[in-house]
Image (cartoon, rainbow over all chains, first blue to last red; front, side):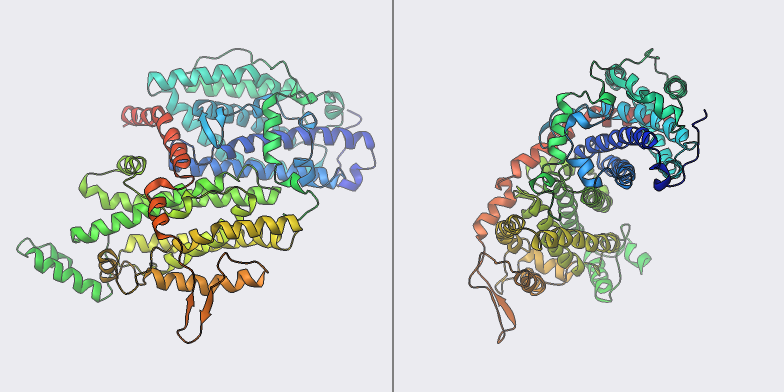
Amino acid sequence: MADMVRVETVEQAKQNQEYVQALADLLFQLADDDFILAYRGSEWLGLAPHIEEDVAFSSMSQDMMGHAVMFYEMLEALGLGKADDIAQLREAKDFRNAILVERKNGAGDYNDNPHYDWAYAIVRSYVYGLHKQVRLEALLQSSYVPLAQVSRKMLTEHRYHLMHWQVWLNQLANSTPDARHKLEAAISLVWEDAGELSDLGPNAEQIVRYGLIAGEELLRQKWLNETKEIFKKAGLNWPGEPGAASERGRAGEHTVDLEQAVATLSEVYRIDPAASW
Amino acid sequence: MQTQMERSDLTENEKMEAFLARIDRGEKIEADDWMPDDYRNQLIKLISMHGISEIMGALPEKEWVPKAPTLRRKLAIMAKVQDEMGHGQLLLRVAEDLMAPLGKTREDLMDDLFTGKLKFHNVFHMEAPTWADAGVIGWLVDGAAIITQTMSLDSSYAPYARALHRICAEEKFHAQHGESIVLDLAEGTEGQRQMLQESITRWWPSLLMFFGPPENGNVTSNQAANMRYKIRTQTNEELRQAFLTKYVPRIFHLGFTLPDDTIHFDEANQKWVYQQPDWEAFKQIVKGNGPRSAHRLNLRETSYEESKWVRDAIMSFGRQAG
């Protein structure tokens, strides 16, 4: 706890290389989680179950992409390269997102025979969103003041997203047997990966020691408690302890799904990263 | 006026005369007002086609949304395509109100789309193989749309005019968004300029077709009816001329060429002379035989069918809650 300080500016942060390293490690997780899930959301464009939802879902993906941009810009400010380069020129193995957000939306390609799973979209967005809420709230106390400030801003937008997903979860859980069945199947799928969300990566100890965010176990318990409450309200069975994939995204281990996502999202930029686009 | 028109002792002819008198006085018609079937049908045809074109029009750009080259462009194009879906939603609601007395719903419109009865704009049947196409669609296709929609801002049907006011305001941002993509390419590397030139060349015939065939003095009965009802005020050719006046000089100014050596402004007649696109091809395209028609319809139909369980669930939930 002796290391808990208030770091007001980038310059101040840069005086301690270890602090910068821990901060950057955390920022990559935050940025990559939002960036990749927003990318998955953008693949849904034009394919949502009805037009009104298409508009709403797209709006939330934009918010999330906007959050990723803010985190990438903080990395840029720390001297880690241009935000665009960080987002688009890294290889999949350099990403620090959790495996949950990189999973494909369903079978097929977004532009070629997509057979996307709306129940999975809802459950993944909501479970991730609940975790993000806990994480952003914890970041309000971050020793890195600029991070606490952007988190406050994000929380305002994020609350609306959670309300949206709650309506969907509740509707599907209490409608037709088919919808209920699909929802439960989606919960099982999401549950196979969700446990990794609170993982702070190989450098977790330093991240917590420098007071950048609360510890993993705290985040995890708070998130699980809230999720349990939500499931109960919707009349859904509690699926138990969430698992984690065999790959550890926070350590740069990823599935082929992320490789494809990164190739697609950077396809145009990589034609000529030095050009103005 | 209203009460007089709704009097049952008026003959259909008298109602029609009173209606046309309202149109002539520049009055606006609301959804619940009496209107001749012909007027209603013209509006349903026009507005449902416009609405579905916005929705199908999201698909070519959607191809580039996940691939947009910078973070700023990623955010901008997501917002842009979302707006297009929003326009579609707004217009379908206007069409739904008009269809309600006929017992028709949005489901019927979707069915008509899949069976080919409801057509969408020729431009959205075309291929968009490069990032430059995302720019050209925003700049020139939306630019063309602004010209046709501006004509209807003063439409006699008030709900359509209101929707168009909002749509046109947003379309102007879209055209700027497209122009901004185009300018980065135009001022960029040789490779970027080439990508843009190929896109302009590719889209040119479709842009000419966008306004529909020229009248050559023979205004169709549909057009005449729409003009009589003050649903539209200009002919296809007048709109195309306005488009050429606005954009041809800009394209040349940026140093790009058009696939038409003959195009020029005829000072004597004060109009553009240009090579006609293949109007037989146009007919085939809007019939659903364009290069990407089947692909895009399939995309929309698959997602619509596969999400039937979701719509069923919402209905079921609504019944329980209601």
